[in-house]
Length: 186
Ligand SMILES: [Fe+2]
Image 1 (cartoon, helix red, strand yellow):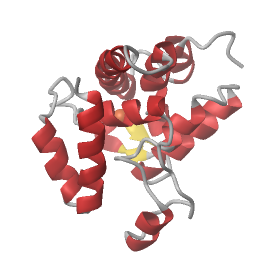
Image 2 (cartoon, protein in one colour):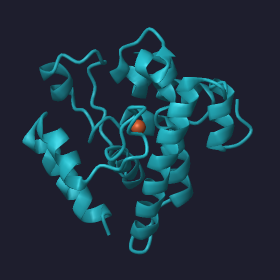
Image 3 (tube, helix red, strand yellow):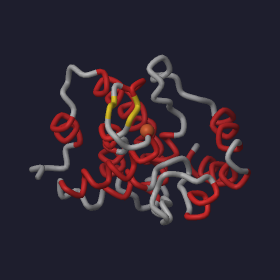
Image 4 (cartoon, helix red, strand yellow):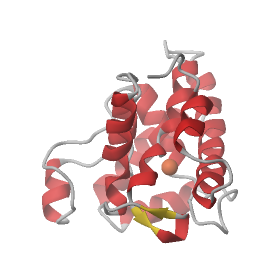
């Protein structure tokens, strides 16, 4: 169990610092956390929101990549990549971070419904994994702008690029992004 909610402490507990997976995770998570915190601070001017929690959750949202098979990211687990959210949630629950765990589980794209999982035959349990609170939506929104591709970690996508990538799945996903973007872009 962790003694605090320090996300860096928990990342270091599970990722040896010299590994490729850690360098990818660190650079991606810090990029997402920086954007998420900027959004959260703007939103906090008009809404009650926990900015510290957004930072912690953004730093931890992808901690589950350790358990998936993604050799390009230096990860050699047994699960398919899309399971990284659920795996991360399980890990955080085992560390007593009950509040942070759902952010891992519900941050994939703009969220996944049971219908998405069934229609796309995704290797996931049949349940809605949707970001329902503002803090989780901000983390998912910020995450959409950053790839984990080793050559593109620091490159922030444009809103148009994000929208286009979501439209490949469905127009309704792109519309959810539009709603978030209107609310979060400041
Ligand atoms: Fe991510």
